Image 1 (cartoon, one colour):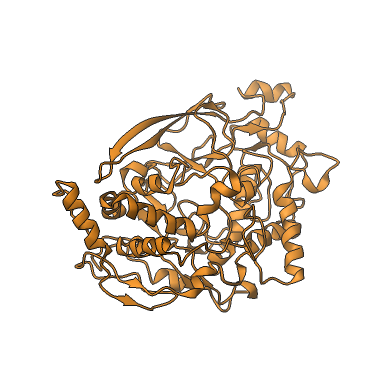
Image 2: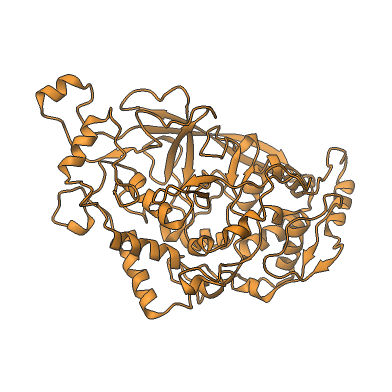
Length: 503
């Protein structure tokens, strides 16, 4: 990454001189898709590639035919059978689950502990649900992950496991002998979340002020005792889910070509990939999905969400999330009829939901060739945003779903972990990801969140209300880019944001 030295900027004049320097295009190169993101760290600005017409169709053949009022539409180039499976999977994504036993056999099995009753409750319109307000809350769109604060201790919390589930189906132990042995006789939600914000004020180099909201989180009403001393919390807002099938279709080798965990090229970027288990094969693979790249493939991501968020067991995660201390939870699971032979979502229905996620399209880019957006595109490269937000790939030509194979896509992510600095740190480990590291978020389609959901929230916990705020939260490896952004004029900042909103 190019290191912009801004400590000596003393005036608006010098700031604008730097901004003018940033705007100078040293050279142009038509590399097209899969361009290299390694640029000489000795230069101030980066090479700006010639605009490629494929940038209009961000997801290749899986791009939406037009702009919709929701992200929940299949890609354009799908056959009728694929569209039928897409909408069948959507029904299981949309409809709420109920507690078992129930007359609604296709949709029972909720809990015993859970966050929400349906997938769409957290992924409104295929995006992010309305963020839970500050206060003493029973979170819905926010998920509280639990992780070790100590790299030498890999165990999850012995009482609460890897995630707080704030809701529970109603169940009470009645066996006197069991009640005498255990202090917790009711199956109840695990905790509440206390959330507040403190303000961080700052000023752009041209004098315009800005304000960031720093969230403060604390668990309260822990129903089964305190967390283990080595356990910390990591609060996350449910992510966008469109385009995930195409991210799944990127070749692993293409990702690993970008890995540089020791910054051997000296550009300030240390991209590294999480190594995580495939729960079906027990093979360690490259992580792609989740805010810290916890899951290696889309099927596992969906299956884990069913078990952890809704309490629906499946062939990938056959056990309920109840721990040994949560005795009523375990009895409630037995009462619901759970057994390995009768999972709460059988493979044929789970596969339909995976197919829905896999074929979920991405909106086309908007007004990319307007003068302002093109100026923003130039700044995107000159500030070296592409060092982590890798613009494009060609998906694996051998990918089993042919509609997703050999597609030129523009997701703007390397799917790698990066140190994002103290301001965004959660302090917990997730496999090889440490407390400062987060997976690079895709940028495609995020400019339509306000349009589709009535809200725009960015970063892992939704603290950023605008794209500008999200950039200002960048630290660690992205600190030089943030400082360069702060040094831009208002007109240049607006152009950059318009480009990100357009892709």
